[in-house]
Length: 332
Image 1 (cartoon, helix red, strand yellow):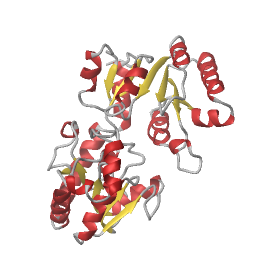
Image 2 (image 1 turned 120 degrees about the vertical axis):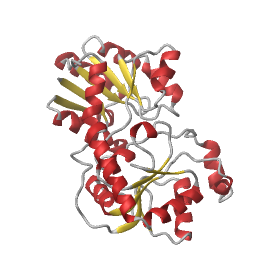
Image 3 (image 1 turned 90 degrees about the horizontal axis):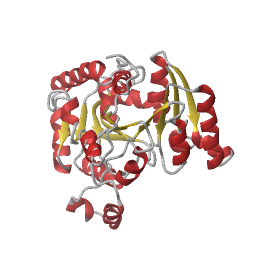
Image 4 (image 1 turned 30 degrees about the horizontal axis):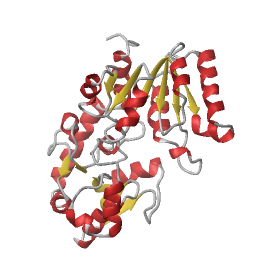
């Protein structure tokens, strides 16, 4: 198939940062699957011209190339809805919604402009259907097996976390440190700074316990009273619903043990307590870390089980094949 991936080449469109999630997991995976793939970097196009010119360039490219599918990963208001509608005369359009559990109005507005759209919400298809949007396709995140992989390295860290700074995450890390847990943290705005894709995969492989920490601030009184900033963040934050993110699949794809927050849909992807461990609150997180650090064989068995499940069911190649079948582009 001819596929045009409309996304930002770099993370948040910043050329000083690494290539984006969509580049590694959409563009690269679709190429590896044997498709003819092009990337349209709308952030750069806007930077060198303007929003209107970018939209016109996109329309012209689709008119000339006429891809089988044009995949979008939206950010804010970069696209003209009328232009997106015009594209449907030349190509099937598919939009990926990464955060529709909390960007509800945004997602509902854009959904009607595409032929199909995805949702990581286990109940998303039903929710959209009930409001007259029947073309939602359940698409949880996944793993690119060419990136998330076993390295066979020795364990270096007791506990690690890779992800952007957030006040709630900082509070959780602080509680671990006070409990005497050695935890290394990497990511945007943390003291250790960001690490690249390969560095992240290395950390996953070298950690006895990999943490998947929520950035949806809770109504935990201990957190809210920890600082004025915590309460202000909770009141202002739109992220009041948990969602299943890619980290779950990336860690498991490395054959690494993971301790994650619980989210609806997780139990449909992994067997909790046999393939992945979850914590319920800050105290439980500390206790679970200590427990699993003291049981090497249990950790390793769970990590291997999660790895086997991931390569069989949760790669992005598997996800894309399922989506294309739903769109009528592949035979069952």
